[in-house]
Length: 294
Image (tube, rainbow, N blue to C red; front, side, top):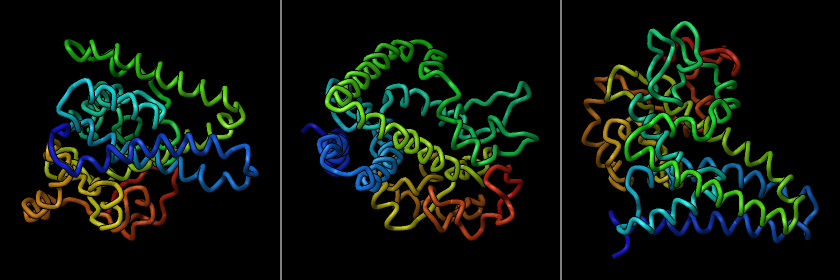
């Protein structure tokens, strides 16, 4: 009765709670473990940020899990705490991402999509992977993209502030418990957002911003899609973003022939490992723009 779309949505809801509990457990264990024993779980925490942003939080943007709006607001606060930034801000900027679909720069040098891989590229090429990954999460004020919106969405700014306040209180409580734990985890939090940007980069490198069927890059590995809740079906998702995550395989079967005709790029690796894909040009260093993808 609580879930709005599918009983399967109980899985991401429970996993979001487990994500926060995992960090609390790390804080509790920090004093008992030597620093080197914390490295593996801290790296797992970094990966878990990218995983949450691109699976649980992503699906919450497009198909909020609960029927009751206050529950979705509360869940947004939980996701904000888990990932360390406002879920409502993520919601607003992600909708702009779908408005532009990683569009190329216009004549005035701007893009509709604030996360477009072309936004800071040169000569009509995507930006180099390394600069995109390192800088993309630090280029705008957290409220900048939300403040650019109007109407009802502009009122969402209050929820952005509330969620950031919840994150600040959560971090303060962790620091009160052990400030060394917060300092130790800070680089891994930053790494987690870089991994999320890396995921986003290869979700669109080689896509065609001018062809709706090919707005995204897909990968169909079963393990990646199992763990990332079918995020691999990214071309399908950009073509029909409101389709529920449990329906992505069926949507792929429906669109497969049209996608082949449209030249949809398909990776043989997960998005976050796109630089290892056999079709990725081997002569391109991470700090150089990619001119073409086979």
